[in-house]
Length: 268
Image (tube, rainbow, N blue to C red; front, side, top):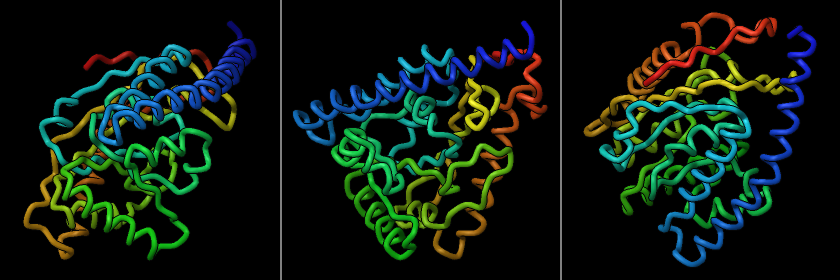
C-alpha cells in the first residue's frame, strides 16, 4: 500500500469515526440520564455511559485497550486519580476502567454539550471555570469536602489542559490541594501516548493498542501545604516514567511518515 493510499485510508477512518462518535454520544448520554433519573446520582449511570461508549468506540476506532493494576481503583478508595488529558478521545480509554461511585472534575464548557453536559452534572461530577482562578479553587475546595464526606474517588487531569506532547505541562496545584485537603492517597494513572494512533490535526486515525497502568498509591496522610512541591514532583516523575515504559517503541518517533510501522501490541 502506497503512502498516499494509506494516508487516505487513515483520513477516511478518522472522518467515519468522528461521525459515529458524534452521533453515539447523545444516544448513550440520554440512556444514562434515564438511569440517573431513576436510580439517582449514586447509581451506575456514569459507569454505564463510560463502558458503553468506550466499548462501541473501541470497535469503531480499531483500538484495543490493555490495562494493568486496575484492581487498585477498588482497593485504594477513596482516592484522587490523576491521569493526563491527551485528547477528546480520552473518554474512550478511561471509560474502560472508570469505577462505580467515582466523580470527575472537568472544564465548564462541557455543560454545553447536549445531553452529555446534563449527564455530567446529574451524576455528581464537577465543572470548574479555569478563567477565574479563585472560583475554580473554591470549587475544588468544595469538591474535596464533598468527596471526603461521601467517600468517593475523584478523577482529575493534573496538567489542566489537553496535551498530546511527550513532555508534560506544568501541573496545577489545585488538584494536589484537593488530595491534601481530603487526605486522599493519589493514584497516578498512566496511558501510552495516543499520538501513536491519532493525529487530529492531520485527520489521521489508525488501529492499535492503547496501554494504561494504574500505579501504586502515593500517600498524603499527614502531609500539608508545605509538602506540596515534593508531592507534585513525585507524582510527575512516576507518571512520566510509566508513560515512557508504555510508549510504543520505547519512546521512538511515532507517525513520522506513515510508512506502515505497526504498533507493538504489548501484553499486560
